[in-house]
Amino acid sequence: MATVEKMPMLQEGYEKLNADLKRLKAERPTIVDAIEEARAHGDLSENAEYHAAKERQGQIEASISDIEDKLSRAQVIDPKELSGDKVVFGATVTLLDEDDKPATYQIVGQTEADAKGGRISYNSLLGRALIGRKVDEEVEVTVPAGDRWYSVSKIEFI
Image (tube, helix red, strand yellow):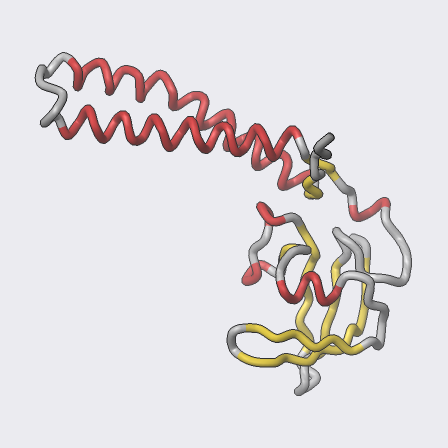
C-alpha cells in the first residue's frame, strides 16, 4: 500500500496556495468563453486564438490539480508552537559565514521558499544541511558556487 507523503508548510504558505487555487478556478469561465469565441471564428486547424485558449486551459487545469494535491497533503506547522535546541522545519536560524557575517533564514516548505526573503526550503542543500544541527555546530554545504561553511549562531521559533 502506498503512503501519502505529507507536505510541511507554514499557515501563510497554505493560505497563499488556497488563494492561488481560488484565482485559477475563477479564471476557468473566462477561458471557456475565449474557447467558444475562437470556435465561432470557423476553421480550428489554423485558429491561433483557439489553440492559445486551449493551451491556457490545459495550464490552468494542471495548476489546479497540482495545488489541490499539495493542499490535500499539507501539514500546517506553526513555528511558535515548536521549541528545542535543534534546527527543525519552521525554525529561524542565524548563521555566521567564514567572515563572521550573519545571515538569517527560516526553514520553510518548498512552495514558500524565497532565499532573498530569508526563507529556504527544508529540501534545499542548505536546508537539509541545517536540519538537526544545534547552536555552535558547523555546517559545510556544497553549492554550485563552491563549498560554503557556516556556524549556527542562534535558533529561534518565531
